[in-house]
Amino acid sequence: MKDKITYYNCHTHRKPQSENEFCIRNAFLCDFPENGSNYCFSSGLHPWFVNNYSESRLENLLLKIAQHPKNLAIGEIGLDKTKPHFEKQMTVFLQQLAIAQKLEKPLLIHAVKSMDEIISPLRSFKGMIVLHGYQGNLQQWEQLNQNQNVYVSFGSKSLQENEKLHKTIQEIPLPFILAETDNKPLRIQEVYKAIANIKNISLEVLAVQIEENFCNVFGSNQN
Ligand SMILES: [Zn+2]
Image 1 (cartoon, rainbow, N blue to C red):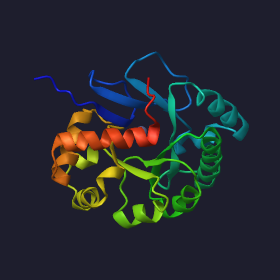
Image 2 (cartoon, rainbow, N blue to C red; image 1 turned 60 degrees about the vertical axis):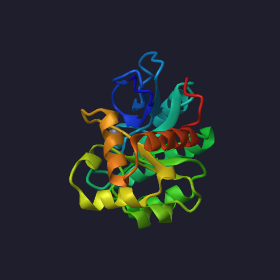
Image 3 (cartoon, rainbow, N blue to C red; image 1 turned 30 degrees about the horizontal axis):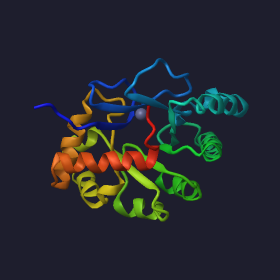
Image 4 (cartoon, rainbow, N blue to C red; image 1 turned 135 degrees about the vertical axis):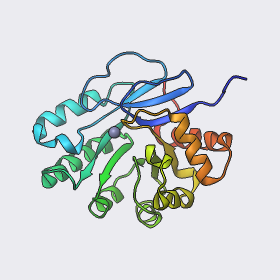
Protein backbone atom coordinates (compact mmCIF):
# COMPACT_ATOMS: atom_id res chain seq x y z
CA MET A 1 0.00 0.00 0.00
CA LYS A 2 1.26 3.44 -0.87
CA ASP A 3 2.19 5.63 2.05
CA LYS A 4 -0.17 8.60 1.59
CA ILE A 5 1.10 10.71 4.45
CA THR A 6 2.86 13.96 3.57
CA TYR A 7 5.67 14.56 6.03
CA TYR A 8 6.28 18.21 6.82
CA ASN A 9 9.88 19.01 7.70
CA CYS A 10 9.83 22.58 8.99
CA HIS A 11 13.60 22.98 9.28
CA THR A 12 16.30 21.19 7.34
CA HIS A 13 19.55 21.96 5.56
CA ARG A 14 18.92 19.62 2.64
CA LYS A 15 16.41 18.91 -0.09
CA PRO A 16 13.45 16.58 0.49
CA GLN A 17 14.46 12.93 0.46
CA SER A 18 11.21 11.44 -0.79
CA GLU A 19 8.18 12.50 -2.80
CA ASN A 20 5.99 12.59 0.27
CA GLU A 21 8.22 14.95 2.20
CA PHE A 22 7.69 18.72 2.13
CA CYS A 23 10.63 20.77 3.43
CA ILE A 24 11.56 24.23 4.47
CA ARG A 25 15.22 24.33 3.62
CA ASN A 26 17.47 26.66 5.54
CA ALA A 27 19.22 28.83 2.96
CA PHE A 28 20.99 31.27 5.34
CA LEU A 29 21.43 34.43 3.26
CA CYS A 30 21.82 32.72 -0.12
CA ASP A 31 19.40 33.00 -2.98
CA PHE A 32 16.99 30.12 -3.38
CA PRO A 33 19.28 27.56 -5.02
CA GLU A 34 16.96 25.94 -7.57
CA ASN A 35 13.38 25.06 -8.31
CA GLY A 36 11.88 22.19 -6.40
CA SER A 37 8.18 21.49 -6.24
CA ASN A 38 8.11 20.05 -2.74
CA TYR A 39 10.26 22.47 -0.91
CA CYS A 40 10.52 26.10 0.00
CA PHE A 41 13.13 27.94 1.98
CA SER A 42 13.82 30.15 4.97
CA SER A 43 16.31 33.00 5.15
CA GLY A 44 18.24 34.65 7.92
CA LEU A 45 21.55 35.26 9.56
CA HIS A 46 22.37 32.47 12.02
CA PRO A 47 23.71 33.64 15.41
CA TRP A 48 26.99 31.79 14.80
CA PHE A 49 27.88 34.06 11.88
CA VAL A 50 26.81 37.49 13.08
CA ASN A 51 30.28 38.95 13.09
CA ASN A 52 30.63 38.74 9.31
CA TYR A 53 27.84 41.20 8.54
CA SER A 54 27.21 44.88 8.95
CA GLU A 55 23.69 46.02 9.75
CA SER A 56 23.19 47.66 6.37
CA ARG A 57 24.47 44.67 4.39
CA LEU A 58 22.21 42.33 6.35
CA GLU A 59 19.21 44.62 5.90
CA ASN A 60 19.64 44.83 2.13
CA LEU A 61 20.26 41.14 1.60
CA LEU A 62 17.51 39.81 3.84
CA LEU A 63 14.87 42.21 2.58
CA LYS A 64 15.62 41.17 -0.98
CA ILE A 65 15.85 37.41 -0.44
CA ALA A 66 12.90 37.12 1.94
CA GLN A 67 10.52 38.55 -0.65
CA HIS A 68 11.14 35.62 -2.99
CA PRO A 69 7.82 33.75 -3.44
CA LYS A 70 9.41 30.51 -2.17
CA ASN A 71 10.53 32.10 1.09
CA LEU A 72 8.25 30.91 3.88
CA ALA A 73 10.02 32.20 6.98
CA ILE A 74 12.79 34.27 8.52
CA GLY A 75 15.25 31.89 10.15
CA GLU A 76 16.98 30.24 11.55
CA ILE A 77 17.77 33.27 13.62
CA GLY A 78 18.22 33.63 17.34
CA LEU A 79 20.65 33.57 20.24
CA ASP A 80 23.32 31.07 21.26
CA LYS A 81 25.18 31.54 24.52
CA THR A 82 27.70 28.83 23.64
CA LYS A 83 29.04 31.04 20.81
CA PRO A 84 30.84 34.41 20.90
CA HIS A 85 29.56 37.97 20.27
CA PHE A 86 26.38 37.65 22.33
CA GLU A 87 25.71 41.39 22.24
CA LYS A 88 26.01 41.50 18.48
CA GLN A 89 23.84 38.37 18.28
CA MET A 90 21.12 40.30 20.11
CA THR A 91 21.44 43.36 17.82
CA VAL A 92 21.24 41.21 14.70
CA PHE A 93 18.38 39.17 16.14
CA LEU A 94 16.30 42.27 16.89
CA GLN A 95 17.04 43.66 13.44
CA GLN A 96 15.81 40.47 11.79
CA LEU A 97 12.76 40.36 14.03
CA ALA A 98 11.82 43.82 12.75
CA ILE A 99 12.27 42.70 9.14
CA ALA A 100 10.07 39.63 9.74
CA GLN A 101 7.45 41.86 11.34
CA LYS A 102 7.53 44.24 8.39
CA LEU A 103 7.23 41.41 5.84
CA GLU A 104 4.71 39.51 8.01
CA LYS A 105 6.80 36.33 7.91
CA PRO A 106 6.91 33.62 10.57
CA LEU A 107 10.12 33.06 12.57
CA LEU A 108 12.26 29.94 12.87
CA ILE A 109 14.16 30.35 16.10
CA HIS A 110 17.49 28.90 17.23
CA ALA A 111 17.81 29.40 21.00
CA VAL A 112 20.65 27.72 22.89
CA LYS A 113 21.13 28.44 26.59
CA SER A 114 19.34 31.73 26.03
CA MET A 115 15.66 31.13 26.77
CA ASP A 116 15.67 33.85 29.44
CA GLU A 117 17.04 36.47 27.05
CA ILE A 118 14.86 35.49 24.10
CA ILE A 119 11.51 35.54 25.88
CA SER A 120 11.05 39.31 25.99
CA PRO A 121 11.77 40.10 22.30
CA LEU A 122 9.69 37.13 21.16
CA ARG A 123 6.74 38.11 23.30
CA SER A 124 6.49 41.43 21.50
CA PHE A 125 6.56 39.78 18.06
CA LYS A 126 3.19 39.82 16.35
CA GLY A 127 3.26 36.77 14.16
CA MET A 128 3.90 33.05 14.14
CA ILE A 129 6.98 31.67 15.90
CA VAL A 130 8.62 28.25 15.71
CA LEU A 131 11.23 27.26 18.29
CA HIS A 132 13.29 24.77 16.35
CA GLY A 133 15.06 21.84 18.05
CA TYR A 134 13.18 22.75 21.20
CA GLN A 135 15.01 21.85 24.41
CA GLY A 136 13.13 24.03 26.88
CA ASN A 137 10.34 22.80 29.14
CA LEU A 138 6.57 23.18 29.25
CA GLN A 139 6.65 26.21 31.53
CA GLN A 140 9.04 28.17 29.28
CA TRP A 141 6.84 27.45 26.30
CA GLU A 142 3.73 28.55 28.20
CA GLN A 143 5.46 31.78 29.21
CA LEU A 144 6.14 32.50 25.56
CA ASN A 145 2.85 31.32 24.17
CA GLN A 146 0.52 33.84 25.72
CA ASN A 147 -0.77 34.83 22.29
CA GLN A 148 -1.18 31.24 21.06
CA ASN A 149 1.42 31.86 18.36
CA VAL A 150 4.42 29.82 19.52
CA TYR A 151 5.05 26.37 18.07
CA VAL A 152 7.82 23.94 18.98
CA SER A 153 9.66 21.69 16.57
CA PHE A 154 11.36 18.44 17.55
CA GLY A 155 14.07 16.58 15.66
CA SER A 156 16.80 14.00 16.11
CA LYS A 157 16.93 14.27 19.89
CA SER A 158 13.41 12.86 20.13
CA LEU A 159 14.86 9.55 18.91
CA GLN A 160 17.28 9.38 21.81
CA GLU A 161 16.80 8.29 25.40
CA ASN A 162 16.13 11.66 26.97
CA GLU A 163 13.69 11.67 29.83
CA LYS A 164 13.42 15.46 30.12
CA LEU A 165 12.77 15.98 26.42
CA HIS A 166 10.29 13.11 26.22
CA LYS A 167 8.38 14.65 29.11
CA THR A 168 8.26 17.98 27.26
CA ILE A 169 7.00 16.28 24.09
CA GLN A 170 4.29 14.53 26.11
CA GLU A 171 3.21 17.75 27.83
CA ILE A 172 3.11 20.25 24.96
CA PRO A 173 -0.29 20.01 23.27
CA LEU A 174 -0.42 18.44 19.81
CA PRO A 175 -1.75 21.61 18.08
CA PHE A 176 1.62 23.30 18.75
CA ILE A 177 4.00 20.58 17.57
CA LEU A 178 6.11 20.43 14.40
CA ALA A 179 8.90 18.13 13.18
CA GLU A 180 12.32 18.66 11.61
CA THR A 181 15.56 16.92 10.66
CA ASP A 182 17.76 20.06 10.93
CA ASN A 183 21.31 19.21 9.73
CA LYS A 184 21.14 15.56 10.82
CA PRO A 185 21.34 12.59 8.46
CA LEU A 186 17.95 11.13 9.28
CA ARG A 187 14.57 10.82 7.61
CA ILE A 188 11.64 12.96 8.71
CA GLN A 189 9.55 9.77 8.87
CA GLU A 190 11.74 8.60 11.79
CA VAL A 191 11.07 11.82 13.68
CA TYR A 192 7.30 11.46 13.16
CA LYS A 193 7.47 7.87 14.45
CA ALA A 194 9.40 8.90 17.54
CA ILE A 195 6.99 11.75 18.38
CA ALA A 196 3.93 9.52 17.82
CA ASN A 197 5.42 6.87 20.14
CA ILE A 198 6.23 9.39 22.85
CA LYS A 199 2.76 10.94 22.68
CA ASN A 200 1.20 7.49 22.44
CA ILE A 201 -0.87 8.28 19.34
CA SER A 202 -0.96 6.81 15.84
CA LEU A 203 1.27 8.08 13.07
CA GLU A 204 -1.83 9.07 11.09
CA VAL A 205 -3.26 11.21 13.88
CA LEU A 206 0.10 12.93 14.31
CA ALA A 207 0.46 13.52 10.57
CA VAL A 208 -2.98 15.13 10.23
CA GLN A 209 -2.24 17.45 13.15
CA ILE A 210 1.26 18.42 11.96
CA GLU A 211 -0.13 19.24 8.53
CA GLU A 212 -2.68 21.55 10.13
CA ASN A 213 -0.05 23.13 12.39
CA PHE A 214 2.31 23.63 9.46
CA CYS A 215 -0.42 25.39 7.45
CA ASN A 216 -1.34 27.56 10.43
CA VAL A 217 2.22 28.79 10.72
CA PHE A 218 3.47 28.97 7.15
CA GLY A 219 0.25 29.33 5.17
CA SER A 220 -1.18 26.85 2.75
CA ASN A 221 0.28 28.28 -0.49
CA GLN A 222 3.52 26.32 -0.45
CA ASN A 223 3.75 25.89 -4.21
ZN1 LIG B 1 19.50 24.29 11.47
